[in-house]
Length: 297
Ligand code: GRG
Image (cartoon, rainbow, N blue to C red; front, side, top):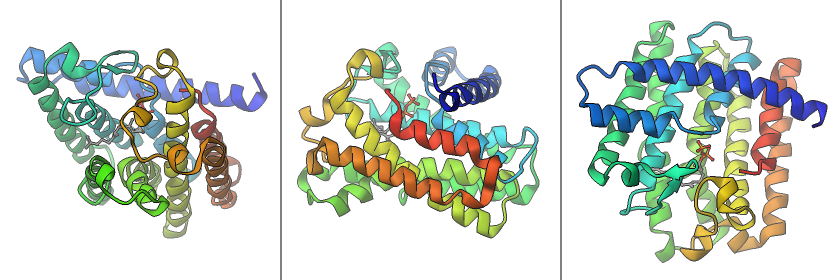
């Protein structure tokens, strides 16, 4: 393993442990929730996720000199929204998938109605967590607004609708960029922004980190499209080759595999250029940017 890969592995392992502990704590007390719903919510969140979004939030927080545990609410909330989106995306009415994070999807392990309610419950839990975060009231309100915008109809949910309608829509790069920037990119950019806001970022720093997040968000999805073609189901922990089987609009389908790989690398370089002003403090963000495009699952 190279020195850079080793440093990222150490950073990511520590970050995942911190985030997983916070998620487990948040899910430990679901009040009067029926046991089956609570069990299914644990199942949906506490599996083998890469935790890319929380790691981006922690790294952005560090880049702007943030300290303390308030950021864990931002990191955890964005992961809860991501987990809800995966549960709903896997439903028969959407992507209809049976495998996620190396095990049966939530609706297969439990049932469809429970899986719908799991997503609904996780979404509510995410916003409740932000509202109670140990951060100034103004920061909490900003974080709630950020996540609502990124997850909502002008963000992830809108991107998902456009993705479902893509078979009947235009098959061109502009439309694909719209879908990916909203379905996947909005939440990744939001993770970066939330970490920075929790760390007290000023306007200029936030602008630079937003530009970083937008490029990394798109690069993540281009890499995901490539992996769907090149990786196998065992490694991915989800069904490989589905995009082609479902005639999905993807970067490899539109421009070919090599051009898609080049596009991801270019987006990464553009993203890295936005980090210059942060110096050494942005090293984890740089390493995460490389991981996003070079990952194998
Ligand atoms: C259902 C509202 C709603 C939205 C769904 C996230 C999403 C939008 C759809 C998932 C479909 C998909 C496979 C998108 C590709 C990019 C993506 C989000 C992959 C999964 O994220 P990872 O790789 O997963 O970060 P882990 O399991 O590591 O957290």
